[in-house]
Every structure is written in structure tokens, then in C-alpha cells.
Image 1 (cartoon, rainbow, N blue to C red):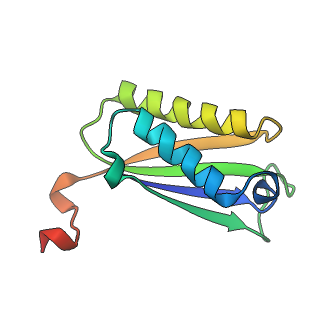
Image 2: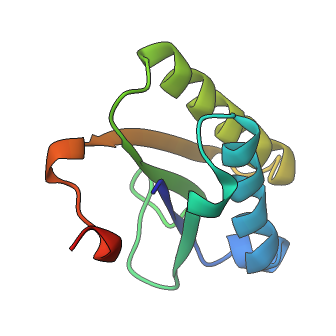
Length: 115
């Protein structure tokens, strides 16, 4: 925890190596000081076919952030802006870069160390 899942169009990976994109989001999450670095998980899902943005096949990046509840709205907004800013710097010609943050409930979260 947290989990950052990056959905993107295939052409994103023609501009940057996948590992560079993963590290960008990882480092921006780490720099937020909201998470322990060892807990940050980042995954990349490139779409090679079957996507449209604004009615046409257009390059995009969308990050789905799933974090443990307890952060303020201001902290989450700063995290969102920091991650989008980092990706915008990396991909200045991509018009659609976005993130949304969802909170996990601590009471219902479980991992292997908890059972």
C-alpha cells in the first residue's frame, strides 16, 4: 500500500521506457512524504488497441491511486498535482494526463501478513 496503477496508450511507451514511467510515479509518490518507500507499488497497463479519448484514438495517461484512508484532502490534492506535473514534464506533448485517488478502508484492508 499504496498502489498506483497507470493506464496509458501504447504510444506512451514509444516516447519513454516503461521503467522510466514507473520510476517517475514511484519517486513522486515517495517525495510526497505520505508513504514509506518500501510500501509503494506501481504498475503499468499499456493499451495497444481498443481505446478512444474524445471520440478518437488519442494518447493518454491515467493514474489510479489507491491509498489507505487517513490523508487529508489537501494532502491528496498535492499528491495528485505532483504526480501529474512529473508526468507532464516527462510527456509535454500528451494532452490527456490525469489521476484520481481512492481511499482504502483500514477496517476492511487485508494482506498476507495480517492472516
